[in-house]
Amino acid sequence: MRMNRPLTLETPMDLPDGMGGVRRQWRALGRLWGDVSAGTVREVSGVYRVSVRVRVRAVPEGSASRPMRGQRLRDGTRAFRIRAVTDEGENLICHAEEET
Image 1 (cartoon, rainbow, N blue to C red):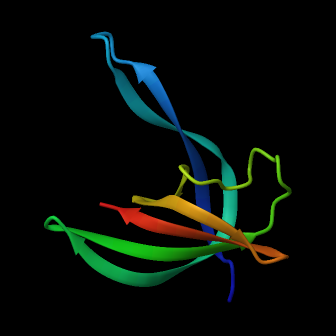
Image 2 (cartoon, rainbow, N blue to C red):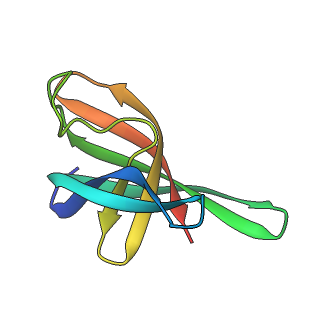
């Protein structure tokens, strides 16, 4: 597999909305090169969920650019919410779901 797709790693930030609630925004942490492969499609309450596997080069634990559960990877207008990350030595596999 070739990791030739530039992906932006983003982390969520909840900011006050001025009315007592919060508003979620995403802050870019950096760019990773990866490979995105489609997984399964399932329907939940009329909404289709597409799972994907994103392979990126391994990043040391504790580094701000290491993907974690709850963050997302952005590829242009597409966003992949990270559900889990597994370590395969030289690579990390981000098990994600495409946001629609």
